[in-house]
Amino acid sequence: MKFLNSTFKLYFCRLLENMEKLKKRWGLKSNWEFLAIIIVFSLNGSFAVWVAKPITLFFGLSPETTSLWIYIPLRFLLIFPVYQLTLPFVGWFFGQFNFFWNMEKKIFSRMGLGRFFKENS
Image (cartoon, rainbow, N blue to C red):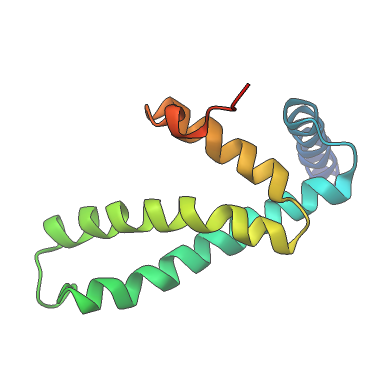
């Protein structure tokens, strides 16, 4: 039992260290902000998968009628933009719109679409 207790403590300490590194990297001030952001990531992922299902069915794509070698990549290609477009909106519900909007701008800039988000100075 002592082994499990010490293993749990080690795991928990590493988890807290990683959480602190992410808070510093993302510029967060509190654990609540961190928790809200983690919740937004998880909810938005589930939401994007949920929204993509009726869209794939609308186009007549299903695992039963389409080869999985085609269906799965198409499904991923559909989930990615849905996820990116809904992330700031889901973040808004948790009071983290600015965080996710800045993240979206950075992602789109790395994809070569940064010209659409340039600030007028």
